[in-house]
Length: 501
Image (cartoon, rainbow, N blue to C red; front, top):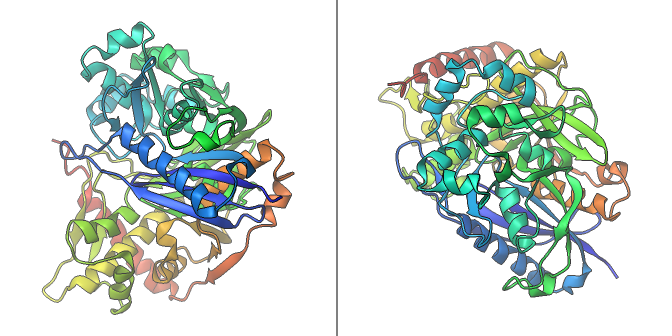
């Protein structure tokens, strides 16, 4: 009797569940959006109970849609929006406040203080990160400092802190497991990527009691089993939860980038380029990040990463805030209707700029506007901005690693756009490879869980599942490409330090 692997893919704007078979094919899927909460400019929050409710509902629906006996699910894997931070009561499981989302910039002043105190080199050496509001550590500190009574309760051991993976595993196990995986721990600014433990010195520097934090464990590991008394999931009781990875390392795994030098880019809410560096950590000189990609058994492999905070979110902004398009496909249609962006550049620094700039105070702008610019040009400039940001990351990564890319594997919601990927190929001047299954984030979590229970015997078997859907090759003259990219660099400078004061 055929068995399956279920994966929870808890993203920034929606909660999803997908059921995979042994060939890595999607059997069924379910998805539910949830609210984005903006209390102040630059602040972003989620309701943790809404995250759990939508993810639980998606999991129940995906099993129902497949019309299978739940006992035929061999394992459950989890992947999640990284850095988003939740604080909850250890005895009741109730969150003490909304989650602070990875995009939120409220801790930028605290980051400035930590930098001024000279903590930057220690953070870089121990964690592979830069001091930035992006990461979880300063978010935990903010919650302890601003939620009434939180610090006192934390010091009494009454609270738990964790990223979304920890929150989901806690709820799925009925509070039996307070754990995280190495890849998510690597994004907290508190985790020593050499010792694979929370760093006591960094916890003290940020004023965070270590008792709050989950136990860090490998990505392919039995964390616990689905509890028997979860409303709506009673039939899933006992299923092992044994794969977990942050969304980007999960996508790297799902793209079968198992060899050092292989890379993928995910076009999701943000834009995330990761390259496998094997058992060796590459130290960046271009403000890129390093961390644990995954730990399997006693072996740990690292990745180097560059992140742009706003990619697919910009298309959503065109739709939901400006009402310039009705759906994402319309953005492509408008962009394809014009040969270029008519001289304009869009810098989507809504929540600052990520790598390689790391400017918490940059803000979005459109430059080069003239009377002849119309919405088709703006739509094209949005797609070009996504590609330009990724080009920034790739050039920095090539310089850091000494490796010249010959292929880029892509995934994520916006990777369905042919025009975006053609622009991308033109800008990076290399092959862009889109697989048949672009749900590689969820697939990576499924693969990790499946390896833990022997559903797939090894990574070679997993790699054989990958099929290419379409390849894009450079079409633009290099001189024209260079001219466009030079203009992008000028536009980025116009956006920087805007919100400094």
